[in-house]
Length: 120
Image 1 (tube, rainbow, N blue to C red):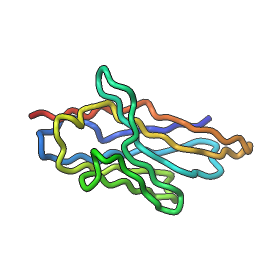
Image 2 (image 1 turned 180 degrees about the vertical axis):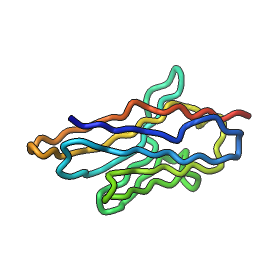
Image 3 (image 1 turned 90 degrees about the vertical axis):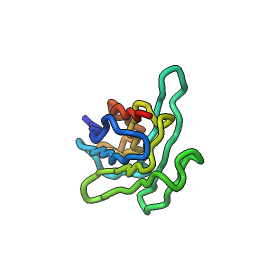
């Protein structure tokens, strides 16, 4: 069994910062790419940022220069530092990880989501 547990969401004023955390646990052999996606009300889920096991990163244009993704491979944890937040960043943020299990099975897993609300 695998779990991705997110934390760190909340309510913040425009211009503020939040740091999201996502820890993977379970019968994990290795973790490849990890990432964050978000879904705002009435909109489709969109990619925010990804990071490979080697540390290569990719960002949506809308968050470049404001958000930073990082990971701690020893802790199976990925982080999202969000600065200069604006109301358009309001969404449920989901953690995603491409995992290979001890059984050899490889699949993509999602967390339950954490709400980020930015007030104007």
